[in-house]
Image 1 (tube, rainbow, N blue to C red):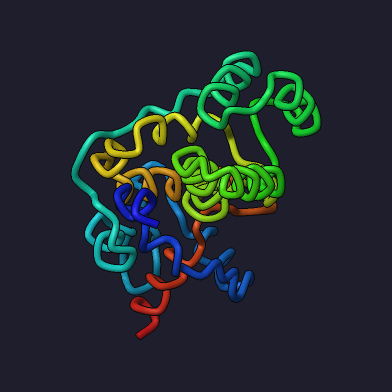
Image 2 (tube, rainbow, N blue to C red):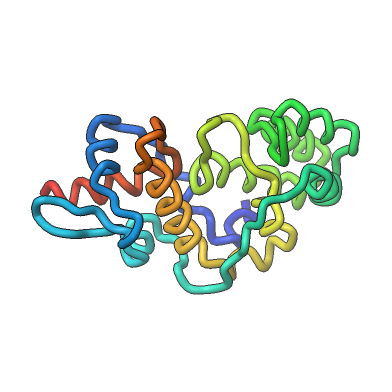
Length: 204
């Protein structure tokens, strides 16, 4: 618990993933303009700000910004072997199932359990944290996989707190809104609770 708390991500543990009213969400998505990163509503123009993220999610918005560049499968395998202490054969099998540099959330839960039983606390914390951000901050359309690139920020758990997690959350939300606003897209992902809480303030 201490290792996880030191990363500054403890507020995410108690956050709920509530998809709420999909109809309301898509009404707002239709009014999203990626050129200005804002919603154009009858009451005016508004957006989700860093202050909103800091106030509602209690995540740091100042600090280092990690550049999550997509990984090649081979790079993902090396990272998983090094940081989660699993065999290359097991990792390659899991990557093949996920069709890329991803791992299943269910597999991470299994790794976490195995590392706890072995009292390998640092590795267990890394598996737990990757699962946590994969379910919330960096949730994707699969709802079952998380990209391995996010594991890199947990290489040194003592340094993880220095990242601007709130800024990363907002960037990810903007990216998902940009994609969802395209006419060919039928789904939005990300931490939608952040989006919905802002709706409440607008409606009120």
